[in-house]
Each structure stands twice: as C-alpha cells, then as structure tokens.
Image 1 (cartoon, rainbow, N blue to C red):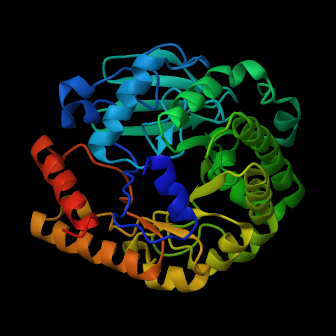
Image 2 (cartoon, rainbow, N blue to C red; image 1 turned 60 degrees about the vertical axis):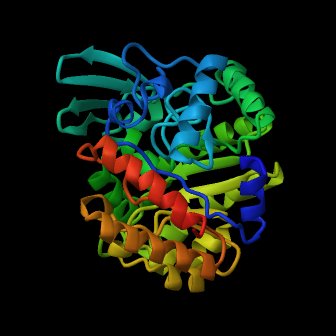
Length: 382
C-alpha cells in the first residue's frame, strides 16, 4: 500500500501489519543534516528560513522529491506540505502565520511573524524566546492587521505541492495555528491571556476568535487544495496538570476544536491534534470534538495509553506513547520501551509511534541509525 492508503486504513480503524512511525521534530535546523546521508540534504527543511521569508510558491519538484526520500529514510508516515513544514509537527506552511528574518547574527537570528510578534532563535544550545507580542490591550487588538487568509495566492504553491504528493502516494498534512497556543504564540503573553480567561472573558473570546477565524479560513483553503489532514498544536498541559481548568477548555477552546473537525470532515480530511502534558480530564471532550489523531501521550506526563484509550474510545488514533527521556537512555532501555509501546498500541487499537518532544541535539548519527533500524524491526514484529 502507499503511505496514503496506509494512513487511510489506519484512520478507518484497520489493524496494520506494520505500526507507522512519525518523528515529531528535530531540535535544531542543522541536526537532520548531521543525522542523515548527505544525498538526502535539501534546503527549505528548517522551520525558520535562513534569510528573508519563506514564499507561498511551490517548493518545487526537486525539494519535494528530496523531502520524499528524507521521509522514507526516517520512516515518516506523513507528508507535511509547505515551506518549512516538514521540520516540526504543527509549524510552517501557509496555514500558520509566516515569519521573516529581521536580524541575523553568528549565534542567533530574530524573526517577525505576520502578527508582529518577534522571536529570537539562539543556535547553541538551540532555544528561542518570544520577546514581543503585539496585543498589550484591547485597543491593540482592535487595530491589529492580519494578512488575508482567503488570498488565493497564499495557497497556489500549496495546492500544487499537495497534488504532486498525492500523485506520488503521500498522505498530506497542512498546519494551522492552535486556538489556545496560537493566542500566546502570536498575539498576547501566556500569563496575560490566562488572566483574561478568568477576569476578562469577553476579551479572551475576542483574542481566540481573532486566531480561530483566521485558522479556520486557512484550514478551509487547504482542504479545498486537497490536503488529507489538518494538523494543529494546542499544548494544554504541563507535566503534572492542565494549564487551564477543564471547564475553561470546554467553554473557550472546545467549540473551536469542534468547528475545525466539522470543517475538515466535510471535505473528507482528518484532524491531528498535538497537545503536550497531563490532559486526561479532557480526553472525552477531545474525542467528542471529532479529533482523529492525538499526540504525544507521554507516559511521563501521566498519560498512559491504556487510560487514554479507555477515555477516547476505539476510533481515535493514538500517536505517541514514548517517554520524553527516551533519547537519554541506553539502547537496551530504548529497545525495551519501544517494544512495550508498540505492543500496547497494537493491542489497544490504531496507533502511530511518535516521540514526545523531538530528536535532541546530542543524538549521534550512529545512535540515530540504530534507532531507525531497531524501530523498524519492532514495528514490523520481527
């Protein structure tokens, strides 16, 4: 079967002979260049452009072909579409706010998003700081100017790349901004937004609506371009508990998750949600919204797959189950853990193996090659 047929069968609830794999991310732009053979290197991989801004044109057949061979090498079951979209789950492409490099230094760069938010990305060790967000007051939100999410030019290259990937049997994914995380990524600080949810709910609703309306319009355009799945990031938990109470999630965020799922499903597309943290209290709500795939289900965040499966029912694809400390373990510990996660996933229902936070900078080429080979053996039942 092609990857597209495989993923369609998985979402339909069929038990597959080989458990699919989806590595979430690489912790820095240059890491994949160190971990894969030189012939698989290609420009446009990084989440952040090296200069200027990523265009909305097609990435081109050469890059698409190299993305295909790169994804075959790491056994990635999905084909994220758009400039930079193959780097990390839920980031880049026309359905997210684009960014432009406004400062470039030997050890860091500064990017500005289409909302006006500015972020500094430091290279060694790789980390970032969003040091400016444009909405300090209700007046700032009223005068905020965003790009037109309905602009056909924004999706012209996206549609072309989707068509190429689907013709080659790939299962295509387009990213949009999250409805909770998108606010504090691009508009207003996390702390202020959480206060708004409690003390100024009308303003909080306006913030969410600003991101939500834009993201739904982007999702609609990507669905019309033929994408197989809409993916988004809404981190709702810490390692110990939810970041907002379940009642706040149900009041402010859940209706947008439901609207996204209804929209995507009306086009025959799936919805893949990423949410780190201990979010067990809202598992039934996420399933009721219509989410088809959920990641990363880190057991270290009190998200055991057995309990998640019981809460969401038989139809949601569980994506993940790996411990966030996996890459720090010995090979014997890693192999035992992967065997346990894959066996549990196959027993419980549809499952994709995914790490919980991306491949870190300290992973060597030798260790990564061993992981790929061992994972493939375990997922194939060899």
